[in-house]
Amino acid sequence: MTERPAQRTPNRQLAALIAEAGFSNAGLARRVDQLGLEHGLDLRYDKTSVTRWLRGQQPRGTTPALIAEVFTRRLGRRLTAQDLGLDACAPVYAGLEFAATPEEAVDIVGGLWRKDSGSHAELRKIAFTPAGLVVPSRDWLIGRADDRVGRGDPGAARIPAQGRPAVPRQRTQTERGPGQRVTAGDIAALRSVGELFRALDNAYGGGHARQALVRYLEHELEPMLRGTYGEQTGRRLFAAASDLTRLAGWTSYDIAAHGLAQRYFVQALRLSQAAGDRAYGSYVLVTMSRQAVYLGHGREAVQLARVAQQGVGSSAPPVVQALLYAVEARGHAVLGEVRAATASLVRAERALETARPGDEVPYWARFFDEAQLADEFGHCHRDLQQYRAAAQHAERSLQLRAPGYARSRLFCRVVLASARLGLGELDQACQLGAEAATQAAEMRSVRALEYVRDFERRLEPYRDAAPVRGYRDKVAALG
Image (cartoon, rainbow, N blue to C red; front, side, top):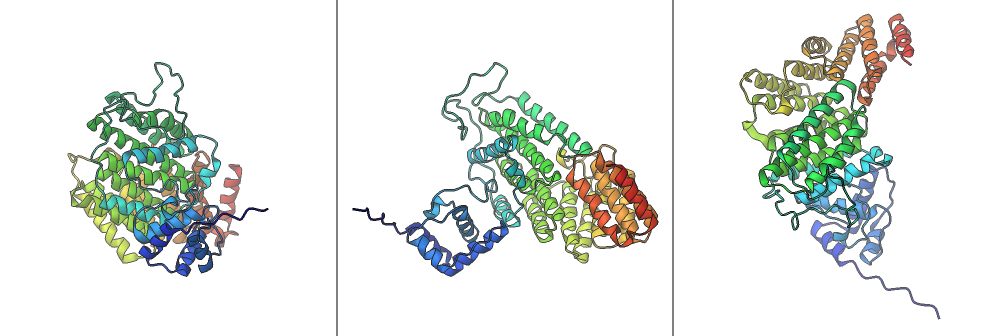
């Protein structure tokens, strides 16, 4: 005698959330299909599919995570597949969560570090998701610093390491383990490591030492975050963790691992909240805005810059204000919004003019000087096809910029080359482009190579001209 199939239990959790969200069955199916398209998935759900889910059928693959994300966007709070009465699966937005607690934030970012430092090549292929910017930036804007981050009780207060053996292995005296007390010297070491990797990134590109940075985060920083520390040390520790995580994202961005970079930026934003450092959070948003500009998402770039401005208000130092306005201008320029871009550039210029030598400027904003402002002007004018102004500002930036910022100088040189091309000065454009191509060949930076490729696309209408043939010969000789 054959057994009768088990009766499915109606999914009352999903039914309640559908009612709360005001979805029809067809409306929910349509939103899941649309979200799937954002991730390159061709889904064909309809109202009958939703009826089956309500009757207890479990959707397959990443669909539970997609459904959870649809409700997260609609209801404005983070929901998981389990909250919907669905089977758990790897979340399609893993790493884009804005954690509810510092402990959860450590679990999320620690998981990213461990996967990234291993042989998880697929992690570096994750796509950038514009929709994934909305919830984190909103949660940061309306959120506040965590009430408590200190971990003074080495027994009860320890953050457990997720996904690791319960029995710790034997460690040497010099090897850090979870539960160990964090000292001021540890914080100073983290800051020094940040400066070292920042200098390497600026000079040689993000691919040069990115993997070493990630391994350092896994093996040195994560045990500190799972250690013991008082409130003051804890805030400083989370501030350093935010900075290094942003740097891991920045170097990932530079090698075109855009989805991974986006996840690092979101986690850096959450860590800055645990640190109670609102100003640094605005800098993380600026970084996210720059990535959006690079990828052509101008509207999202403008929104991120404006959230950063709202988050710090008028109390930020003039240099920080100038940075925030300049990044907003870049977003407007990508969109071709001449008046809005010009207005933001003017605000940036005026803010920087009010800066005084004795002003207290955060370490992360000290790079924003006249050279950087001229660079921002040059990029904006190039994007707006105002080539005369672009050339003037790019030349000024190159005159003022320190040699240590080799990659930034390369970018600016390409902007100048594109401006000269736009002005019909083909010989100068090709000479500048060849210089930039030579520099790019010495770096491990996909962005540097892409800047050069963009210039070469602009050269295409002149491909038969002698200067362009000479340029191609020089580039070919680089191998």
